[in-house]
Length: 535
Image (cartoon, rainbow, N blue to C red; front, side, top):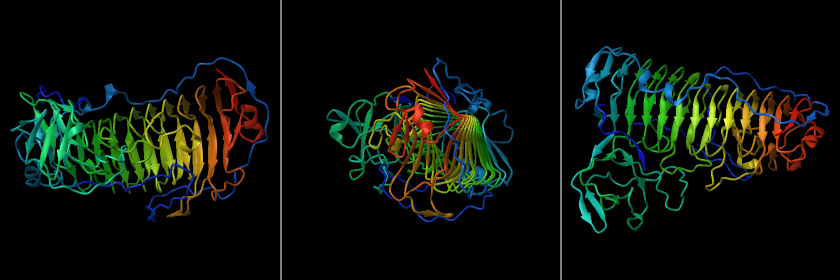
C-alpha cells in the first residue's frame, strides 16, 4: 500500500482519444483527424544525404555524463512554491462552486487550510484564480462508515454508483477492472482493487456493483475509510484561469479523463495532483496554457494528458509513480505524459518511475519540442514520438527506461527503447544522453494509415550529437520496418553520435533486420562521423 494523505495534517472531464499501437509489424489505421491551426515547419521534400563510411572506432574507458540541464526535482515543485493568496476565502465545509458562482469573472479565491470535500465540479469564470497559500486539500472522496463483519471481510452497502461500462485497456485484460473509477483509501493508504471476493486480502478491496456492496480485507475499526466519488475537481472552457497551490486528490475520474481540466491560457502552477483514478492534469483545447512546478504523482492512469491544445508549455514539473490502477503499461495511455493533436514545449521536467511511457507524442502532434527533461526508470519507452511530425527531442537525459515485463513488453527494436521514433516525419533527436535503456534509439516504420497531412510515413529523421550507451542485455540502436512501410535511402540519418558499448565487436546495431557491429553500422552508411567507445 502507498500513502495518499497524512490524515494528521491540518491541511466533467476532458478526454484523451483512445489509441492502441500495434506491438507487431501489422497495419493499424488511426481515425481521420482535423489538423490544428498550428504554424509548423514543413517536412523536407528531398532525402537527406547519406554520409560516406569512414573508420572512427576507438577503444577506451569512459564515464557517461548527463548534460547540465535545469530539470526539476522532488524538492522544488508543489504547493510550497505557490506564494501568497489574497482574495475571497473559501473554508472547508463550504460549497466552493456556489461561492465561485456568486462572484464576477477575475476574482481570486483563497482556499483555507484543511480538507475541502468537493461534491460539485468547480467551474471558474474567465480570469479567475483558485489558490491556496495554506496547502488546502481538495478531495473528491467521501467517508465510508457503518462497516459490518462478513466472514473474513468487512462490508458496507449503498455507497456505489450504478454499474457502468468499461473503457480503457488494462494490464490484466482478463480481470479487466482498471476502468472502474472508485478508489478506496484507509488512513490515507491507497488500496488495490481485486476482481472477486475470494481474492480479497489485507490491503485490497472488492466492489460488487450489482449488490451495491464494498468489501474490505482490512479491519476498518478505528480507521478512516474514504472512497473517491466526485469525478472532476476543476474544469472550465473559460480563458486565463490560474490554479495555484492546491492539493487535488481522490477524484474518480474516468479513463482518459482528468481530475484537473485546463482550458485556454490557463496557468496551473505549484499544485500537488495525486491519487486520482485516471489522468491527473488534462489540457483540453487549452491553447497557450502553462503547467509549471507541479507535483503530478500516483494517479491511476496517466500524469498529464494534452488534447487539441496548441503552444502549451509543460515545464519544471515532477511527474512520477503514475498508473497505480493497472492500465496497460506497454501501449495504452499510461505513465507520465501523453499528447495528441497538439503542439508546444515539454522542458525541464523530472519524469520518473511511471508504469508506462515517459513522454508520448502521438496522433498528429505537430511541432512538439521535448527538451532538457530527466526521464528515468519508466516501464515503457522514455520518449515515444508516433505518427506525428516536426519534432525536436534535445538535451534530455533518458536512462533506465523500457524494462516493463507485462503483456506487450519486450526487448526488440519493435518494442521500443530510450527514444522511439515511430512513423513520423521531420524529427530531430540531438544532444541527448540515452543510457541503460532496454534499447537506445529505435526508429520504426509501420503501415499506419492516413492523418491530416496524408499517409503517415517515416521520413527526414536526424539523430545527431547524442551519447547512446548500450552495454548489456540485448540493447540495440537502429531501424525496423514492416512490409509496405518502405523507407527511401537517406531518410534516416545518424551523424556525430557517441556510442558507448560493452565491446566494439558487439552487435549493438540493426538496420532493417540485419544486426551489425560498430564497423558494420558505418559500412552500412550510418554515422561516418560517430565515435564508438568500449566501456
